[in-house]
Structure formats: structure tokens, C-alpha cells
Length: 87
Image 1 (cartoon, rainbow, N blue to C red):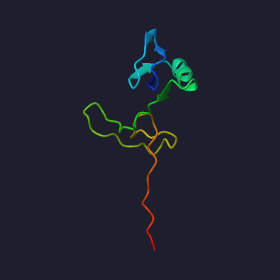
Image 2 (image 1 turned 90 degrees about the horizontal axis):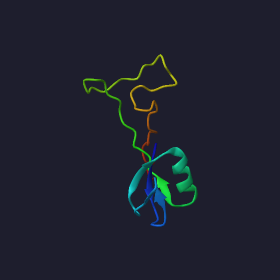
Image 3 (image 1 turned 180 degrees about the vertical axis):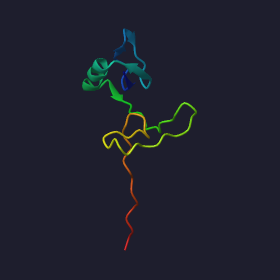
């Protein structure tokens, strides 16, 4: 499932007329068609920290270098870095 924000009032989503500016959750195939035809844009979810059953933050397991267990989805967000100094 993908979240799509509709950018036009001339389209249909899941058999119903879509409202411009509204967000809909659609299948991947339907999202691909809407984006390709310029009727919508994909909304990307912000990365979230993973939590255990008690609500505490999880730590990354260093024995698995290809997966980061501390973040939902297994990928950490990119680091922004510091701005360059002038002069």
C-alpha cells in the first residue's frame, strides 16, 4: 500500500471520485498509474525509531551490518551534517 496525495480533481480512486488535495491509501499498481499520469504524488513516511513491547527504544545489533534494527524498515535516515563555515 502507498499513500498518494491527489493533485487534480479529474480522477477516480478505488471506484470513487477523488478530491483534490486529499490523501488516499492505494495499491502499488494504482499508485504507479496515478503518478505516471500526473494525477497524484507519493507521500513518503518519515523514518521512525523502533520500539520494543514496553515502548523503549531498540538498539542496533552490530552482528547484522545490512539491517539497522533501531529504525522501522531497517534503514536509518541520512545524516544532515554541519553547515560549512564562511571564511
